[in-house]
Length: 403
Image 1 (spheres, helix red, strand yellow):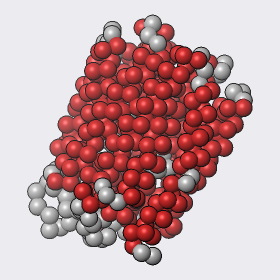
Image 2 (cartoon, helix red, strand yellow):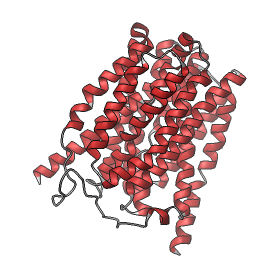
Image 3 (cartoon, rainbow, N blue to C red):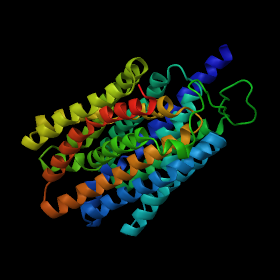
Image 4 (tube, one colour):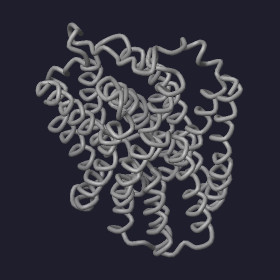
């Protein structure tokens, strides 16, 4: 029993640290956007395109990552991913052309990030904590918020000293120091009867339908829509909130730390979502997420004061990670555990692809119109639309079960 407790703690710690680095590195372009644009004389749309490619690539490979996790060793996936991540980020410090940025950050870093994202980590967590999945997954996913806070704070404090090129090098080194030792260790098996390095999945909710049968379920498609909206909003904000704050006259240090501030309050959102989903299910936290987004998008459309921008960062930051621990909960509740990695990968794939579109939309809108006002209006409309989706999911469930 004591050995299993230590193994479970190791699984949580591994997931937390992996996602800590993932959370800090995947949003680095939001911090770098303005200094890179100024130094390289690129447009915001051009640099935003690298984020779009990053999101699309990581999205496309996520279902394949999910299949690897379902069938083979997650340790191999994690080790390969962190090595590729550190190499591609280190080489970003040497770029001179947009094509180099697209290949290194968009393609290679996109591939690597998918392998250490919340989807495969969530599957690993689900095999150890079938009864308290919401809270256990929230503990691991809180690493995203801690990384967003700690790594962005660290790089912001040193950005004017080491420059954006030095920041990329520092981030690459940090990945090797933090994560490589963990991935070199043997990840414990989920069941004592398991053999080799493969973890056997828990089947507490039953194996569930096949992937093809799940794809015919309306609930899966409504999940895809709601996560698409969430991703579109999240990566527009992640890529442009610092530049937006600078445009509105917010100081360099405060604007650079806005995203770190969002990570701090995002920790509270993650734990609230996990606690609530274990008790009332994942739909209520999802509704709360979009109600709060309606409020803050409405406010920022009316005023761009420093107070409003900081308030926006606090409230939106609280919602930033709310849906992350809920993905595994939704999928296991509706579709069982047999294809947990694959189905989660499909949903997160759409989230990331939509995120890439959101990042590029923000840059294109700013270059064309000189502001983000139209994009904020679109985000408000999408938040209102998202409120109806949980109701449609419940209706689809009743029509399927006959309840």
